[in-house]
Image 1 (cartoon, rainbow, N blue to C red):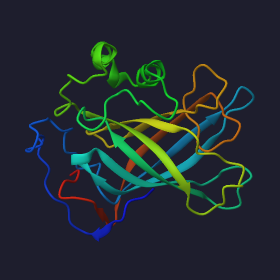
Image 2 (cartoon, rainbow, N blue to C red; image 1 turned 30 degrees about the vertical axis):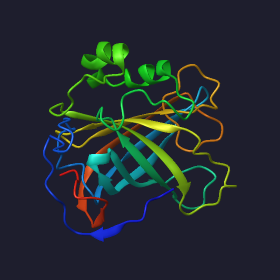
Image 3 (spheres, helix red, strand yellow; image 1 turned 60 degrees about the vertical axis):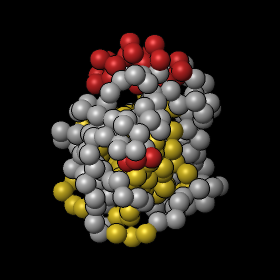
Image 4 (spheres, rainbow, N blue to C red; image 1 turned 45 degrees about the horizontal axis):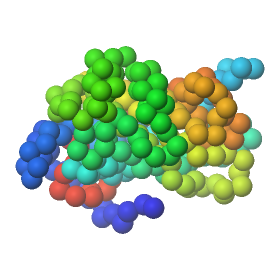
Length: 230
């Protein structure tokens, strides 16, 4: 369920260290912050055809200390939909304090995790350690990429009988240098061995990818705690 939020136009500085636990946090990122917008495409390809939807994402809130962020995702040209389709999602930041690379829920196995994370070239240097212990011993505080999971919680503007689904979740990689986002989707209902990404389709397509770039616009967001991404 969404958490109760308090609107705020300010953000607080985040260091790379959690003072209470001494555990290194992911690097602060100026391009991943409350109110930041991203735009791009969702490749929704199937064995029969190639298709891409225009997608907008906005970060509505984040709490770095607890490895949490949330936002909205909008698809603009979804077939069979009369209007853009918007969902609200909540995310887990892989920080090895709150969350590791192993999902441990949503019907995702460690093998599923490794397969999907390995789709990101930036994950390659971390692979052996993640295979060994889930990456718990990795220090990600200075790593130039932030890995996350995004789980859509509900539809904002359409009913649950719209013929679309949010059963799965996204494996996400964010680049701190240019603000680009790449995502691959895991759907436990898919019959395919290799599932990349799905954006609400009931009939899951196996060959899909989310690609977003940071836009220049930024609006007010929400503060969840004294820790926020900068």
